[in-house]
Length: 225
Ligand SMILES: [Mn+2]
Image 1 (cartoon, rainbow, N blue to C red):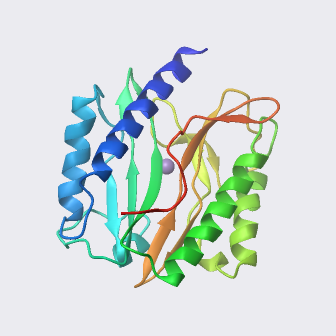
Image 2 (image 1 turned 180 degrees about the vertical axis):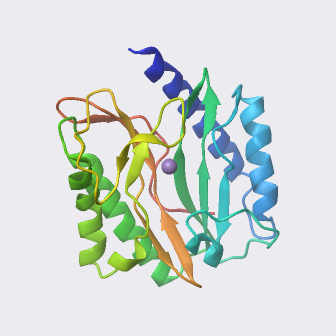
Image 3 (image 1 turned 120 degrees about the vertical axis):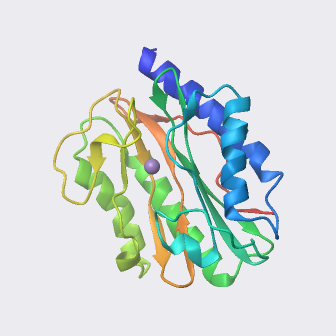
């Protein structure tokens, strides 16, 4: 296994431990900022060299901004919470996004989650070396568009991960470059409904000639806390 992959996998293992421990503290009444701070503390405790970016902890309508900054609002029951985090280890990065529901989610939230998950799974099934970047983006974008939410998927499908958290190969609707074996990429479709909610699900994969290996082990069934 390459050094790069070894370090990225280690970073991802730490990320998953941090996420699991964070969930024990997620409940109504907590603030996004408290949880973001806790991510930093837990990452250190689990041996990360640092975070690969400022974590996104965004509840309810805050998550409709894909790059939301953690705020001081208290989490409330009925909200979906977006948690996007990554750490550094040995000079390499990890990146993962999961959604959790604080109490039973609304029908709209469930629907959006289901569509994003379907789009993400389809893109993961399709991802392999030799593929043109924009064709992979199109797999997820097509599913979201056919479900009627095309204009609410407002960013690229994913990006390369390595020493930098955002690097080539970028998976955008326009990029025509071919993906290579050994590339580590994220697959992170989303739906963002202004004033209401945001959903994104993000895994990291390493591409192989025949497909890919998913480096993310955290389950994707929507957890209701
Ligand atoms: Mn990402």
